[in-house]
Length: 129
Image (tube, rainbow, N blue to C red):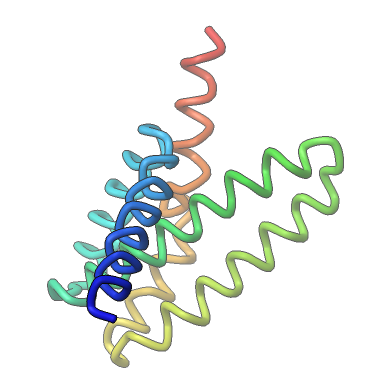
């Protein structure tokens, strides 16, 4: 029984590591940058930073998948990205205190705050040149 449990745990760890390695270097850079900026703007503590990084990783990876999959259908792509953003907002807001919520509302209204898409566009433009 112990061997089976250890084997499953061991395989789960390697499956997780393999999945984590599938994220591109560009995506990892965007995740780190966005998380750092948001954490600084909102005054997050270390545990909040870790949860935000996980949410940003989910958002960036799924956003990249949506952009690639729906590349030929801009309307559906936009709708799916908006749904993803709404889901992120709901999860993220649930972990914030009232002061952080106010700061996040101001952050969201700043056009320069949408680093998720801007950084992807920058990396896409530099790879196309």
